[in-house]
Length: 113
Image 1 (cartoon, rainbow, N blue to C red):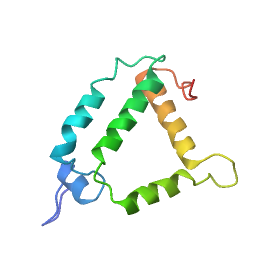
Image 2: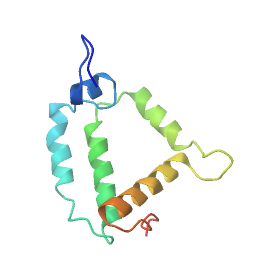
Image 3: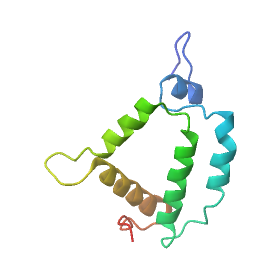
């Protein structure tokens, strides 16, 4: 749709809306170096590649405030309503299903091995 006066569309709008952040120039090299250790995605290395992606994500967020780190730790302890499953575990399994289904054509790839 059309963008109103003083608003931005595209990636700039996504940044302004808080959906994306600009990575500090100091973080670019560590993030890139981490991501380039990934291998071509296969069912056998999916978990390893996802772990590398998470490490890169954390490297891009190295400027997090202590309050943000405490908030993330609190989020890690949240449980899915009326279950013994953590929200983080559910999100990780959903990501693995998505990667398996859409990138590897195998939606059954979700459990860590």
